[in-house]
Image 1: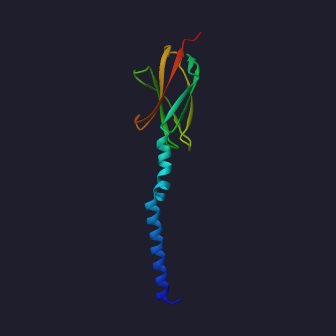
Image 2: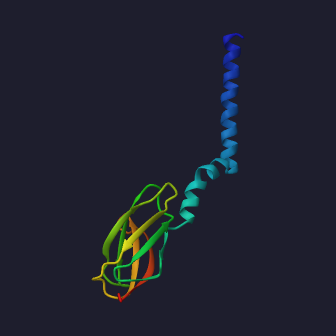
Image 3: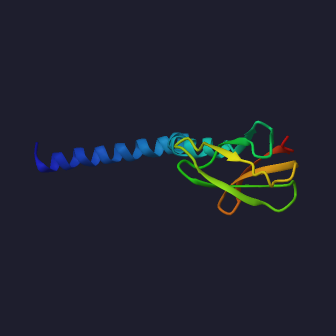
Amino acid sequence: MSRSTEKQWMGRRIVAGAVAAALAAACGWAATVAVAPAARRAAQAPSMTVRPRAARQGGTVVLHGSGFAPRARVVLLAGPPGGARTRIGRADTDRAGEFVAPITILRAVRPGRYVAYACRHRCRVMASAPFRVRASR
């Protein structure tokens, strides 16, 4: 194949590739492929549960979180509803953005209603769940 014929074929391949890319973009294929993982993460807002929902002073609750960024550090806080929050620990999410954190309730914690929080970015990304502390026997 002569150099001029080779250049013609290369030019046609480049044009064909550009046309295919433009067609895919026009149909939304490339956008769908690029946006789907981000849209899936955005659709699942962070959430958290506390099990059991009630525990005695000195007992343990387990915080289960999901919907966070993969392999991220999450700060755990707790406090009365609408009241001051106290840091109670931290957790690292797995590659699915989930964590499990057992938390021991100090005996000095007053019985009552509380809210547990899992925070990222100074609580701009947050999940919360209510729980109750009961008096020890």
